[in-house]
Image 1 (tube, rainbow, N blue to C red):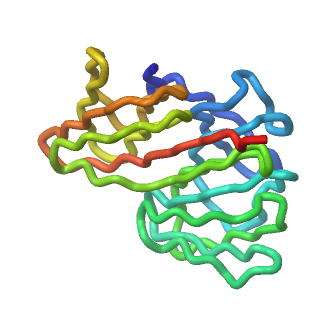
Image 2 (cartoon, rainbow, N blue to C red):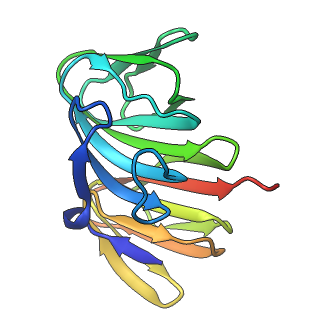
Length: 195
């Protein structure tokens, strides 16, 4: 278990050069945009335009700030991301155009290599003390609004906005404690597919 502070996130260009992404965690460590197993990042989308194409990758997107975006994914009806924190999953190798609804957005982006890994993304309102049962696969708790305390196995700390708790493949119980105001966490789980 480790905390990845917002100040340590790596800022890098999008694969297609159309903007910048903030890489939070990538597996294996040090992997590039063409050879990762899974990746969690955030990005500011300021204009309409094409999304980067990632062959063999499944992708989940959730809007963290802004009015939202409509995704035109080849072979699908348009996908509307109009509610804060509501994730939408699509194939990252399908050509995709993003159309902003009203001004820039900040999004959370989770990707995993199809056939080898699966992932899930769920928002969680932290407005009371909560106990989460963590399964035996990699789990990230991303603080996307406000801040909250974390406790597990004698470890205690606090996450502020955009800080991340990375809990690596070990079952256990994690307690979240709200601060003065309600906070929002995005819970990301990544599991290797069995052979």
